Length: 224
Image (cartoon, rainbow, N blue to C red):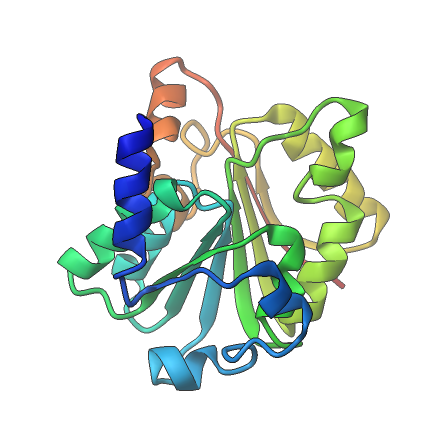
């Protein structure tokens, strides 16, 4: 994507009512106006709140929002030029249950109050295979602690990935922590019984993986 295109998207994001771009200090001062108030102040309802972390172009956030109109969805990514597409689609399709936040995922506990979130989706994250990159792996122990803080006690986690490494690493960590693994599948398009929300919503990159016959994995779990 050219720099002119990026600038155009950044400018357009600033006009979207469903896009929030808080500054880091605004969050870390712990005075963020929407923390604990997403349902009441933005969505204007008491429906369940669902996050997609590292949402990319926002295809999964928008796909889930269309599928579940009685839930609220927020896509989170640091790259606003990417989720511009999802935000624009949500506006064009008049989806009032969708928002996007431009921030780093490690700041998530400053954006949401304890027990504010019902579900979290992580879709096709960078597996960060190199050892020195493990601190950025979105299912490492530190991130799981952050998710646990903002999730309701019975909150659900979903991991959908094309990385066998990420799938195995996360399962091993969850078993070691004695977390409740509700469902695990190492090839959702080849094995029967896969949840429809996993197989019927696909991202741009997921389609590319499928064309190469790459297995897509999925885990649904609770952080005890």
